[in-house]
Image 1 (tube, rainbow, N blue to C red):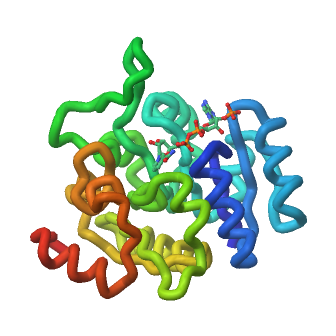
Image 2 (tube, rainbow, N blue to C red):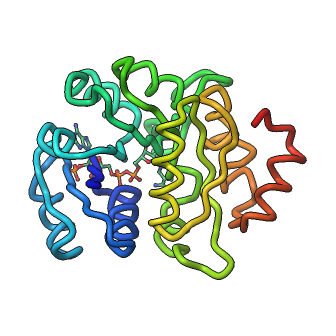
Length: 219
Ligand SMILES: NC(=O)c1ccc[n+]([C@@H]2O[C@H](COP(=O)([O-])OP(=O)(O)OC[C@H]3O[C@@H](n4cnc5c(N)ncnc54)[C@H](OP(=O)(O)O)[C@@H]3O)[C@@H](O)[C@H]2O)c1
């Protein structure tokens, strides 16, 4: 199995490093291919770099580690290549105002996941995943004892199976919060099960199950 990672910033490079540590093959792509090449070189022979188009074409699963505005450009342009692929989306509805302050870019109640899912071809297998921790926590908490949980949300069984496998390979425990309608719960700002909504806590699987049950999830 090969996983494409589009975007090698905070999230994409952390996910790439964890997957390679778990013996997964990854192919990396970025806006500037030299950025992807530099990260791939650091990660060793299980990582390579390619254009966005070629990375998607050569992969079974695609982690789209881009900001929502970039996703709104990149996904429609790669619609054909994404047919039948599992697409893992860590995005949040975040941007910055003219003062550099972080702002919500979508109306309250609308998730980034719902937008991203709507931009994919009908045959793609969509899952919200790998975005539930702050980037530094994601980078530094793989393979803890007990393992930290990464929540995910999907309506698609194939996407769920791939998300569970990749989250485990990356050194975390997976826990499904529900379908795409529940993706908003694991996004920030506002998601009660995003790390930011949990006062920065990293949950193990038992704590995560309690949090899910006590906050009234639908899964
Ligand atoms: N940072 C966090 O703590 C955090 C936590 C959870 C979820 N997230 C979400 O994860 C996503 C990525 O965040 P990040 O912090 O990793 O962002 P980032 O560090 O700014 O990285 C963004 C990456 O996107 C690439 N990119 C931009 N436009 C592109 C295009 N048109 N085609 C291909 N690649 C493109 C950039 O490539 P170049 O380097 O070549 O410009 C860069 O590698 C966001 O949606 C964010 O909301 C972030």
